[in-house]
Image 1 (tube, rainbow, N blue to C red):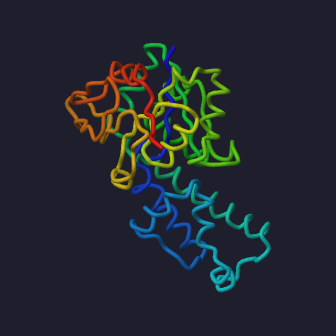
Image 2 (cartoon, rainbow, N blue to C red):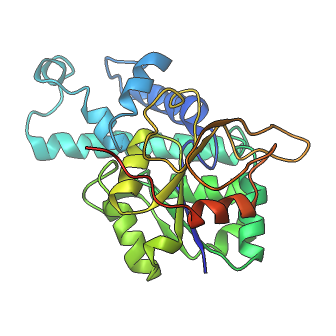
Length: 264
């Protein structure tokens, strides 16, 4: 049986610009931290896997001293964890308030795949409460509870672009990589999926549209919906022939296509 593994942020919903970024900045303000992230700065931070890791990237020795933060690495890591917990709470509240609508086609494709008996999973390095909140809001609690697997947060030591989370997903699902299609939105996620030997469909966003997508089997602006946003194909290295929106037949064609091979 085919399997679909979804990333969360930027795939299930447009979470980065409208959710994570304002939650990070509100957290920085509440804790009196001497930095705020613009959209451009945050776009660059997305190259770093994990929210705590993005926060920690600001903590140069000069910043630590100026902000009166502990210089002991263990104590400093505890501070970062505290900030991240608050940021996650702010973000989860935004989701509950309906401020982060699902990306086009997500609810439709997940419903059709579940009804067809596909195996479905989420593999994200974002905090688990955030991922669960987004999934439930995007597809409803009943559909979310029917997912076969949800991996999130610190379930692996090495975050994307390392393939660890996808290798763990394959192990937990007891799935053949040939039967698995990953849906990602960024190069970090694409490289992680490719490193686990998996085909990857990219649904890019404003932060990631210009990123290298050369390992992806299919690259689109969104999954699209009948009567709604139309899919625009950016790159197609598969047997799929997408129309105005991505169908299960397109996903099956991606799985039937030869994996993308890189030269060199």
